[in-house]
Image (cartoon, rainbow, N blue to C red; front, side):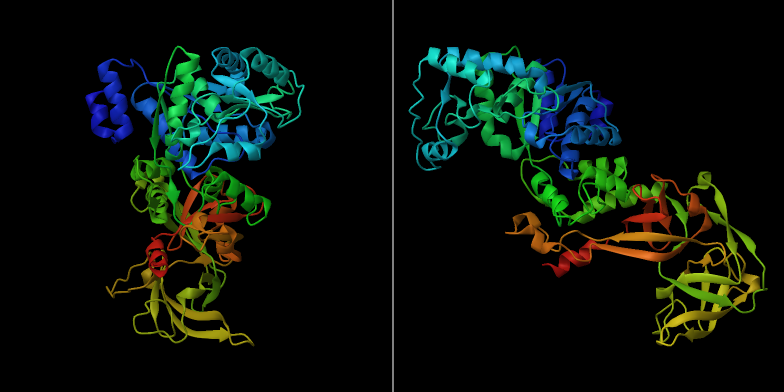
Length: 557
């Protein structure tokens, strides 16, 4: 990494370790990996790990592999593999090698045989309940299995018969022979292989036994010559086992495991098991529901790769778990969209306005900027006519003094158009205002008055005869509790108002041809993107124009 890179790249304890290893000559190149299990869709917590592993490799001119930890075939699927590949690429990262733990099944098996021959592993017939009983507690040592002292020959025979598919699931385990009195429970003869006669999406029915994660992970790292194995803090107590396995099997390389704090975001959950429960129990429409913290859900909601990467940079990499405010995430996407989103006008809760002194049948073309600060984004033409729609919230029948929008006798500026004054309104049989009667000042075209009078209120609008009908999805936090994962039943804290669907929205005519992936700012309302999963004209609100989380957090204190 050059001096210029060092000045622009945020530092953290992991980068400091890597830099020290390079400076000392311990390593001459950096090799990392991102190793998800394909048993669900990636979420924002995985995004942090992706950005860290791929980002470190990029910054130090190294390499990063994408490796699927596919050793639990009953829960894994190619659907998840393909979704993970799409998510990583969406974040604008590209791997050097696409790998699978299943690529190494034969090598892992051969290493296990070597451990047996060294007297470092044995086949155990204890049941799962018995193993838990024998393991001991944090304050009491475990006790050795009766099978711990099988002969090497008997262990080799039983393990070969496990491999041949001779035994039913659960009959035997291959366990490491380490120390049943270790203060670290992970070192009390952990399981290395279990019998599982399950069809594997890549290897089919070739293997009736599958290696355990703690055994597979470190050896896979070593086979791929990973220099720095970056993982979250829950694996810190597993590091001695990581090192023990590599010391015993004597691989050519010995990666260094380094742990960092996982991402914990308020008002959401980042457990794949619990996210799967939300999908299975139909609390959400799927893994890509825009309320979900999955990368696919965030993409559908309108988050950008740049905003997610910026968020991961902002929260940093630490050794201490902490909860991140949702406002930090939303500020990242808000700042990105403020720079790049096309400005348009959309009326979400329309109220009809008739301009009584505007010529009948006349239509004007007005010029509107696509971005107020970026001339290069150009302009568009919007139509103005006698009948328009404004937001219902922009009118009050009995308005207080500091209400600077429409009320009878009050004047406002229509964005890009004219000054109008409300003279009357019409109610329906239920007493609801359904139409405003207004007059316009033809001398104020473009939004300014030749007499210099000051207008405090500017509102958005659309021409009734030119607007397109659309639905809009407004999203709120999925949970009402700031830490739903810490509750006895997280589903009890689902927010019943997490989704509001507006079906009578009136939008600028140009949005009839809106494409998915193009971001828009509906002026005065928020940032929106066309929904990618519906054929109808439907927009998802990505984020509001201003931070709304400070008020929510204060209410929950």
